[in-house]
Image 1 (cartoon, rainbow, N blue to C red):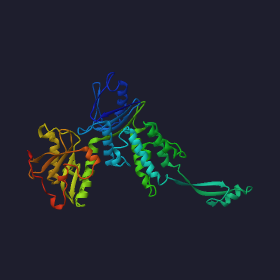
Image 2 (image 1 turned 45 degrees about the horizontal axis):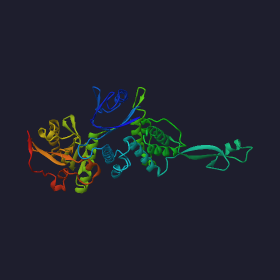
Image 3 (image 1 turned 30 degrees about the vertical axis):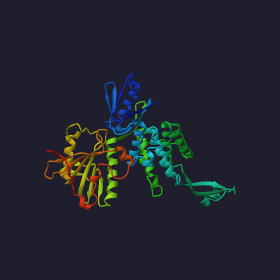
Image 4 (image 1 turned 120 degrees about the vertical axis):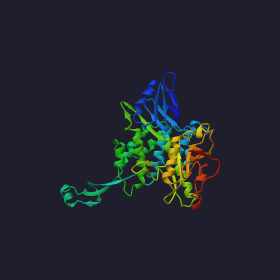
Length: 430
């Protein structure tokens, strides 16, 4: 199996002299119907990836799709570490700490990163012991256990005084929970690429040697219920369901097995930015402000046209600032610095409906667009709201702490600054 690394939005040539063969492209095509809309686009003897990162695996290929950041190093190792750090920051990698994401995982294929992360979650949960269930059994024993079934004992052992017929509760790890974990681990063992990852999965499988082999699908895992005693296992099974959904057997098309674990980078960037803003508001404003992610929802019309800002800084019911994350490259040489009219209209709708005069469109920084405020516009409506255009360093967003450069002026220090506007050179959109 060939292992390849590409970048999001990268075009890949197909053919005898291309980056992938026609047979390999056919394997991807069989999988494409199970992928998110926009993940792939087919052209003449070419394939273009959309704004998604993660792994695709066919019978012939193991492909990792990495972020494309036009700011700083663009090596596969650095981009892999950046993606892992962003996933960790967004809570998509259960047990990874952001500081570790750039170290041991930089040289591992992304599929192995996801598998090892699941193993780490299982390891942490197993510190409290495997999930055990008690079942009632009746057996003829040499010593009493539980309670003696006297009537049945006299009938069964009338001529054998060496045995006692007992009814007792027996503890067993052979239950649907551990059967599900074993099923997932067996699948991961077959998919792991590096010897180290294979050995890690095999070691965990050995812990479940007494557990019955069963085939599980994602919906079977989702049907499991968790009481107070085993509640700490719930995130592990949520991750197991996610892996089953992406890896096996739900994404099978025709005769070819396929695997897909993809992350929408637009949503991931939005999530990481929102969590950093939320943390900064909590640290800076002493809890006076709340940060809504994809909230609060309002309607533009009486009974339709939902509005959901990416990030809303609020105090009570008042919206102090609204930010929208844009996972695309700014071109400062273009009219309006490359900000699309549609994005400006959207922010104007937020300003009017949420009665908010501080607005920002946030983009990844690039070589031509350094971190910080790029420009600002005064929207020519009654309240004259300010729309700032900001570039943030994605690496700092993933690995850093504190307030990202360019965002600090949007985060109020206290209640007295909630209506402040940044004054300076500005443009007007009319």
